[in-house]
Amino acid sequence: MAESKKTVTVRQTASPIRRTKDQRATLAGLKLNRVGRVATLEDTPSVRGMIAKVHHMVEVID
Image (cartoon, rainbow, N blue to C red; front, side):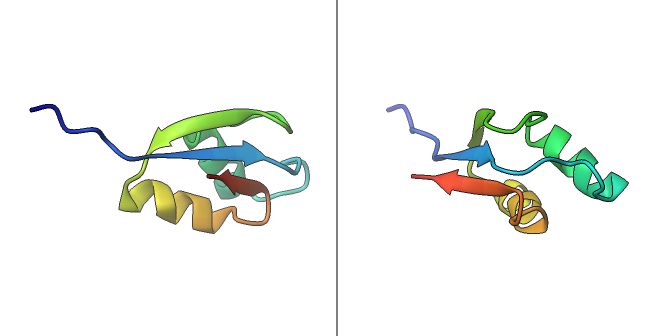
């Protein structure tokens, strides 16, 4: 019996220009680097924490 892993899809809505290095690194960790880029990631507490850290630059798509 295969378990389906939950995923979360995020879209970058703002530029990382003039943001702190840790916020830029968080976007890179989320596989985002351009406005409009979309990434589908496994829904884990660590990914949710990364999204919360840059919530003003990303949009969660459900």
